[in-house]
Length: 413
Image 1 (tube, rainbow, N blue to C red):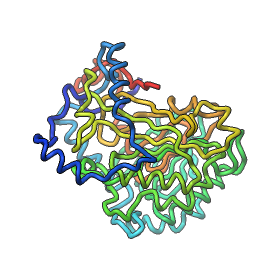
Image 2 (cartoon, one colour):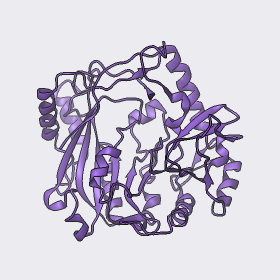
Image 3 (cartoon, helix red, strand yellow):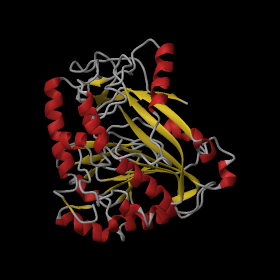
Image 4 (cartoon, rainbow, N blue to C red):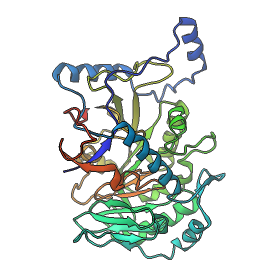
């Protein structure tokens, strides 16, 4: 079985960076914006309660098997990946709308985007992949693998190979005003017929992982964040995304613990006609089940929040098992963090909330990998589908890897 390379799982929490004296703590608290009483953040008491429940019933390591880069290999591969990610769409710079424009070649491709036919990848009947001179050639193009088997995409210039999951569709592009308009037209063009639960061009589930500005992302330089307050990464989607959400559709958005980020996401939900009905927290732990830092920390917190909303249709809401605002539900995911920005895969957790599991349509925006059966869109959409991020499972087929842990992420209802 093929598995992803990972970072070493944490054995112990990070060193504390919290202020030591009570006076210093009070000064930090005074600078923090207050949460709105009508929209409180994820209750920390529930984090502690959920963690205690799991630790009481589970005595093994909190991590599934991992294949780890050796230290030398990690350094060289990471530099190559980061360089490749920066060149994927050409050197870029930010514009006033928060989008990023690539090279002149990329701009020409964008102008032709509306008139391009989708690229249909061949089935992986042989070891040969579909070759392009450079991966940037398929930027701003709708690429589809309509088959039940994976497809292979080869960058002939860098010799990098990408694995394209079955029944997946992706768009490698920045997310600016013009790209959003073209995406919208493409969705209607490729999804011209209604499904059992969605109209043409609509999706039953939309997941967003915006590049919110935060110190951790800036330090790692893993991806470009929105630095200025006016550069809300969701703003460019405000006028368009709502019409692509099916009646009763689910929208989920990862946010940081910054109050302004939460406010931006809630405002976007309201613009799209989406009501916040659930909140999930991904509590990051060590392999031994300890939070990676203090849950009530002022400088750093060990969890990220996923806001889950419903494009409200009362008739549909009464038939499924997603909460409504009358009984807001909180859920907790426990897991050992991996490479920076790599989130837990939500597919198996979301599917029970879909009315038609076999035919639902899903879209991930600001994606950094592809998911089988889903649409994915973003300027790093192929990042973790590079073949160099993958290896074979087993202790003897890669002498530079080691296997750690036994446990998968757990969700506590």
